[in-house]
Length: 333
Image 1 (cartoon, rainbow, N blue to C red):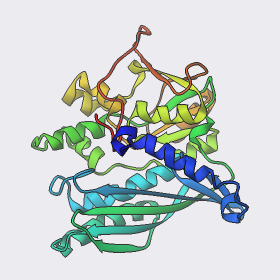
Image 2: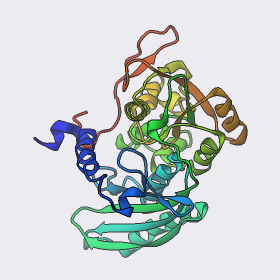
Image 3: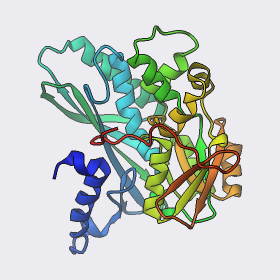
Image 4: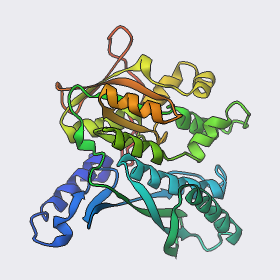
């Protein structure tokens, strides 16, 4: 069987089951695990708090093409996508380890520019770049591991309950719109600058993740694969269903202006927005709205029927079909 046949998430499920067979081993390293494969970050007990760790990478010709992004933007984004995982757990990020794979003819100035982007975002959130590794590689890649901490409770994908409202921070569809513009070679304009920035230099929602946790939010995930796909991850982990009212989706105004009706599909399935998708009561969502300057939108509700299924409906309650259901590294679409 090939990985292309099972897909990215099918492969993750196979590996997770292998790991789960070891959970009964009587070792402190296993007994202290709070969250493992299946959440945005791993978590384990460490004295009076929970330690978090996450890892993610950017690979040339998979996540980016040389020349389509500045090296500083690659550094920024590589750290941002890891910080976003910590945010989705409601944690505080602390340290980062950086591994670079570089062709031998890479300019040193490009590498230092990449690190400028890393450091710039790291300084913004108080992250220490604590070390890492460099290796030769025919294909350029940057892989980060970020550690952090949380109190005694986390936002978990498996915590959604029927009746929870579904909330989302910020606007959606901007990153997918930015990628479309960049891939098409469109000349940059002032109007589409927010779209390009959303794709190249996303802002992790660490403050909002902490707010959601403190206010009493239940489940959360960052939107990396796409709104519907990532909500599906929550539904499967929590054994619940979900209904999204598409007229309540906060589509980015610049995306709507540039792509008209197609912008809604970008918001539903485009991915890489790195906003937080979460479930909570109406009272909790009101508390979050009161504490952040970001828009926070209620887009639907968690249901008891059809576990693992996300329904998208229009204003009249009719099923709404869209072009793409999210990113899968080994998928065919």
